[in-house]
Image 1 (cartoon, helix red, strand yellow):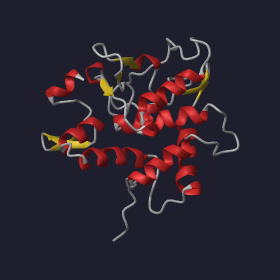
Image 2 (cartoon, one colour):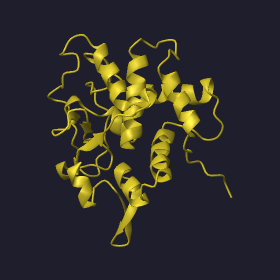
Image 3 (spheres, one colour):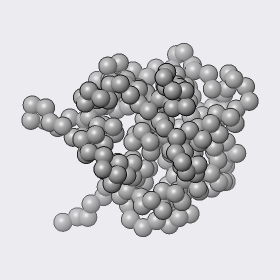
Image 4 (cartoon, one colour):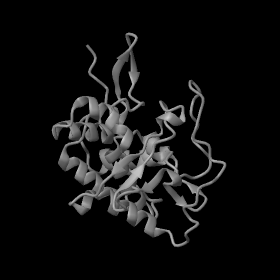
Length: 229
């Protein structure tokens, strides 16, 4: 009889307000870079239907221009709690939006443009993304793609805390809202726009398909059309 504790999706207006607030100084220790890094982070998470961990662990070489059309970006989530091997490292597309306020391409360009030195976003060669199945993933010491300086990591705890402050203190949203709400909003947006549930579950690697009477995470893109993204 207990009430459900799972996070709810945000409405379209709420999501727009969250992105707008993420571009402002919301905490005393916020630096100017937060105003560029946070919206880029949230919009990347939204477009990839990813977990907070997925995007926090992205590295510089996991984003690239689409080989055939340079105005399209591709991202490959390689470090996640349900990705254990290279065969799960598929490239997914990030396409621009006619609304500049929620365009992931513009947000990422603004974030990258903040750094002055081309080495500021360099990849650290000893930053490991793979992990054996069953082993708990530890947050890396070295910075990934989303960082607050050349050698300054932006941890997922700090990202989560900033978003929760926006959701609960600034916007005072009703209901159970959290970092997971961004992922829920992404999935719900896809399904509201007639994307089949199997495809949206697969994009976000939700628990969906059943193998040998056991429900597994959709971390493997089993639809053949996904292999060419």
